[in-house]
Figure 1 (cartoon, one colour):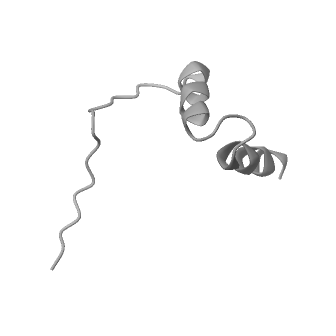
Figure 2 (figure 1 turned 45 degrees about the vertical axis):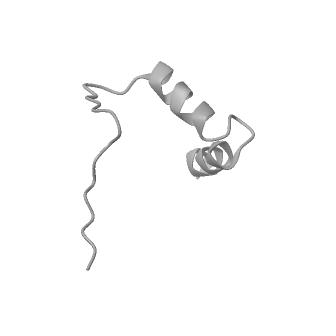
Length: 46
């Protein structure tokens, strides 16, 4: 039997949305030409 614990490697507290933080996260997911960038562009156009 497996137990899943949703736990981050480092504790993070986000008080409000930040464009600078979002830019760092998207660059970690492959940059503006990666899959995450393509997905967010697609969703923002809908």
